[in-house]
Amino acid sequence: MTKTDPKLRRRALIGTAAAAVPITAALRYSDTASANDLVGAWSAPFDMGGVAIHATLMHTDEVLFFQYVEGQAGVDRTSYVATWNWKTGQLRQANFTDPRDVFCAAHNVLPDGRVFIAGGHDPNTGKKQDALGVVECDIFDPVTRTWTRTTPMKQKRWYPTSVGLADGRTLIFGGTASPGVNSTTVEEYNPATNTMRTLPTTANKSVGQYPRMFLLANGRVLMAGPAATANTFDPTTNRWATVASMISGKRSHGAVALLPGAMSVLTAGGGAPVRTAELLDMSQATPRWRSTGSMTYARMLSEPVVLPDGKVLVVGGGAAFKYTRPVKIPEMYDPATGTWTAMAAHQASRMYHATALLLPDGRVLSAGQDNGSLARYGEIYSPPYLFKGARPVITGTPASVTRGGQLVFDSVDAGSLSRVVLIRPGSTTHEIDTNQRSIPLSFTVSGSTVTAQVPSTPAALVLPGYYMLFAVNTAGVPSVAPWVRVV
Image (tube, rainbow, N blue to C red):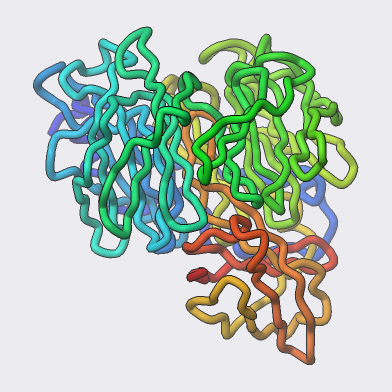
C-alpha cells in the first residue's frame, strides 16, 4: 500500500475507530454558564475515509454514506460506501456485490429500517459525464449489512427524489435520463411485493433535478423548491395542483425543511444567494408563502436539520456556487419567534455535496463537500441545549408501538418534561432530506411514568418505521433517544 493510493488508504481506515470524535465527552453536560450555552460547540474533524455526499442514519446507530466513483471510466465502476457508528466511531465498508455508482441517487428509509436507493450515475463514465441516469435500484439491510438489487425503474434517473408514503410505498420523482432530458414520470416502489410501477400519465410532470418533496400530514406530497412555484401531488388521484409562488422567486440550492407536525415548511437562502427565509403553512385554506426573519449570512448549498426542541439548524453553505466563499457559521432558526441566531463556527467548508444529520444523542453530524483538505472529514456539533444542565433520562421504552397507540416509558425526570417527540432518521443529499420528520406527542405524567399518545390521524402524519424518541425538559435539554418502531 502506498500513501498516494487514496482508495487503499480509505480501506485501511475501515474497522478502526474515529478517535478524534469525543463520544464520551460529548455525553457529559455542564450545569454552569458558558459561551457554549449560546452558540454550542464543535468536535475536532475526524477522518471518515470517504466523502459523505449521501448520508442516512439507520436504527443500528450507524450512518450509511457514499460518494461517486473516483477511478477511470470502465475500470473502477463502484461507489465508495461505508458506515460510521456514532457511538463508537467505528468505520466499516459496505461494498456493493455488483458494480454500482450510486452518486446522485435518491434514497429514503423503508418501514422495516432498510435503506432504499433509486437511480444514480452511469458507472461506465467515471466522473466525466454528468446527468446520465440509470434504472437500477438497491436496498441496504443495516442488520445483515447486505445489498439487494430490487426491481428496476422504467425510466433512467440522475438526481431524482424519493418520498415514503403512509402505507409503506415509495414514490420516485424527477431527475434526468441524460443531459437535457428530464425524467417526467412518477414511479412507485412497493417493498411489500418488491414491485415497481409507473403511475398514470396524469402524474407526469417535469420537476427537474432533486425537487424538494415532502409528504404532508394530509397525505399529499408537497414540492417546495427549488422552483419558485410550490405544487402538491395527490397519490390517491395521481394529479398535481398549483399552490403558490415564493416571494423571492426561485431559490436554487436553497435549504428546505419540513417543520414539526408535517404541515408547513421553511425555506432559507439559495438563489443569488440571499439571506431571506419564507414559510408555507399548508394547513391554511389558501396557503401562501410568508416572510420570516432573515439569516445573518446569505448562503446557498446549506443543510437544514430539525432538532428535538423544534428549532432548525442550518449548517454550512456559502456565498457562491460551488466551493468558494464558504460560510462556516451555522445559524439556528426558532419557529416560535421567527428569528435566527449565529452559532459556533466549524472548521471545514461545507458547501456542494455536504450533508448533515441529527444523531440520537441530540448532536449533529456535518460531513461531505467533495473539495478541500477536509473533504473526507466529519465534525460533530453539540447544540446549546447540551450545555444547559443534565439531560433527562428515559428508560423502559417499548421496541414498537402502533399508530394510535400509547407509548409508555419511565423517567426519573418525568416531572420536568415539557416535550416528547418522535423524529425519523434523516436521509440527506444535495440540501434535501425528505425522510426528516418531527412529530410532537401529547403526553401525561403519573409519578415516574410517562404516557405519550401516538396519533392515528391525520393518516399520513406518522409513517411506519423507526423513530428516535426524545424527551425534552423545561430547560430545552433532550434525552438520549432510544429507537422505537411504529408499526
